Image (tube, rainbow, N blue to C red; front, side):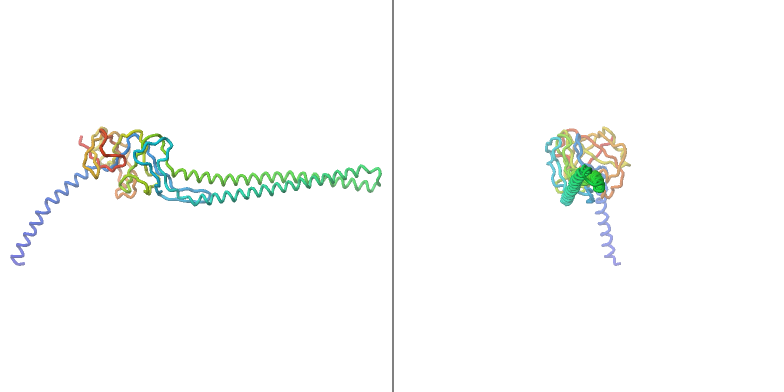
Length: 342
């Protein structure tokens, strides 16, 4: 290497060292600052949570199962609702099953009606036969009463005819009784089949009603944080079964719900002051820790997002109540929380 090239190499190395030093220091400071923050979201402090329904159903051999449901309707955030009022509606995946169930009900009802007609006709025909046999027996009795004016042979013949006629009347009577018993049993079976088919329709309607969420009590609608989209839940989202969709708050009080890794829970205590910000704003809001869960759970479960890279990490759920009403903040907003030192 020539002297000129050596000098260029030395200058280049010195330049790289001078430029890299401050950059590494700044990056370390940013990483240290970011590691002090806990993730979470804002929630209504005094509210009842409402969750997405189970998406699967099974009706009369018709099965449908899935893990998500599309949110078709959602009451606006901040809307005042009454108890029982609809606040959200999901797409029901079993619409095709309703037509199939109705066709099945019509078929069973038609079979039951036809069976009732046939059974009644069988009984009616036996009743007609019984009346005919009774007329024959009565006629045979009249002939027997003429025995004094008849020969012994003819009188005996009339007595035999009368016994046969009485026997046939008794046989038809027994057949009518057994036919009525069979008719009642068949009608009961057909009626049960109709009720079973109609019960499947009621079962279908029960599943369908589950996809409509109603307010558990009067209050204000507060949208939940959607961890998959990292924003508030909104109409059109695909929601996992059991995922929190919204809450019905009794008042406008907000709280910060954040998650502390198991190995750092010693940094948080009841009454601790925390500083809350959002990813989009550096404005600080003060809050005080009011509740710490008794045991840790997987972060993916707490965040309702099993696809998190660190979803298997154990963390404690912590709730801190805001000191005063935070300006420009509503339920379902993503938060960053820093705990002040003791």
